[in-house]
Every structure is written in structure tokens, then in C-alpha cells.
Length: 79
Image (cartoon, rainbow, N blue to C red; front, side):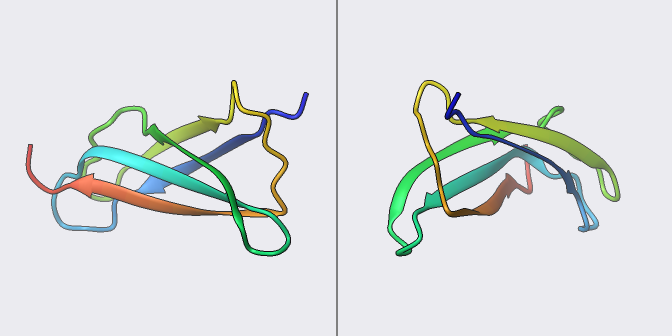
């Protein structure tokens, strides 16, 4: 209990395949202080144009109870 799980999907809206797609989560308290961060790869890690890939970010083994969080997506255009 106290472990956070963030799940979602990433859709490639570009004209080319995205490689090594990562989703970064930054966790904040109510005063906007960063209290943690983590990242996960999509599954699969390469996403074709128009395709969608899921991701799951777990805070384990860190106990995180954020007020809110932000997500950023990072990918490589070439393999």
C-alpha cells in the first residue's frame, strides 16, 4: 500500500516509427514540490505511425503519495 501505479497508452501521431519510447512521470505534492519521479518503456518499445502501445509505471519500491503528477514522452526517430 502506498505504491503508485500509472497506466496509459501512447499513440504515435508522427509519419515515422518511434523507437525506444519512454514515458516519464514526475510526482508533486500540493505545494508543487517534486517528491519523486520514474519512467517506463512502452510495450512494445517501437511504435509505428498511428499505432498505440501501453505503458505501466510503478513507484515500487518507493512509497509515493503525490497530490498530482505529470507525464512526458520521449522517443527516438531512428533506430
